[in-house]
Length: 142
Picture (tube, rainbow, N blue to C red):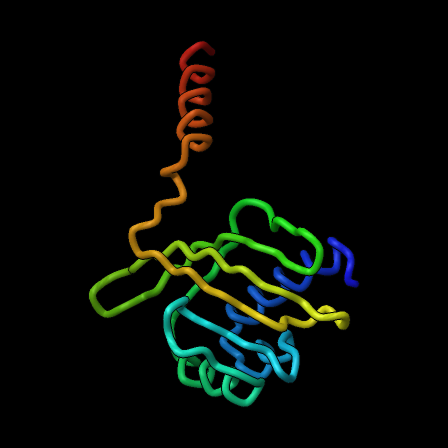
């Protein structure tokens, strides 16, 4: 089974490939028989050919993906959150997505479940609010 470090590198490599907008680079992170459900609730893409077609269809999407927070790894599964900025003619649109992956013994994605949420705000979390409040108090003291 892949190590935690290998799975974390896989997640960051996958994000970097998305930012290059190169479907061939993206598909290199998937196992031959992988399943991708993006977004969750849509018909899954099964196999590298179907997943490649999905990314080919989004090749020209002007996106920038930035992971925030840790990659959480348990066994052969991982979850991470990312901010997706999409440039549109009407301005920028931001989406927070949570991706859940499973990896095979070769450290390739065997399953990807994506939960994009246009209303999900990374700053809307109790920990983030407490941290912001703490920083505000610290900076007002000095």
